[in-house]
Length: 162
Image 1 (tube, rainbow, N blue to C red):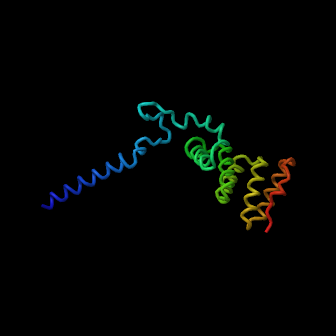
Image 2: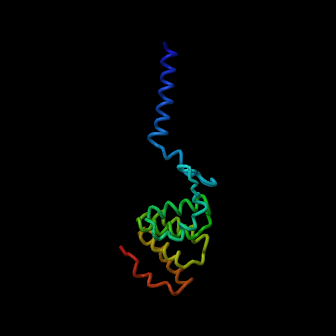
Image 3: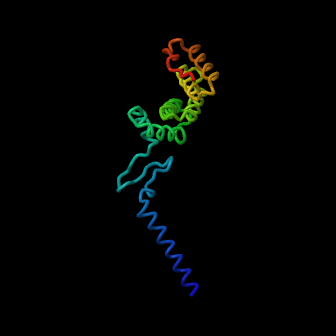
């Protein structure tokens, strides 16, 4: 009797797993895997993002904030971790979402990769400014931005003082 119950519970477990995989989560079978050469959906070859990311990148400003974060994260994690514009765009998206900590991290990586980019220093300065406890860092970044490029337009008007 015990063998019969064990076999039935095993079969029930397998059936429920297959039900969850195929019926409840059908897209799991078709999820893109990084660095794969192609994928098939309904017998059609779909190019992976690695081959078309630059076309998406050209229209990144037309995407939602959430889409921008997803695309840029994919780019820096799987395609090119040295693609500085992706960090800047993702930092801008985080900043717009008021996620200042993540914005700060992305701007810092962008500055490490391109230390002569005045605009990125300016954006990081704004981010420090919104974090309130980092005013000295904000002032240092604003100073660095003006040292690199005196044409940065009136950044002082965006400073929020307590």
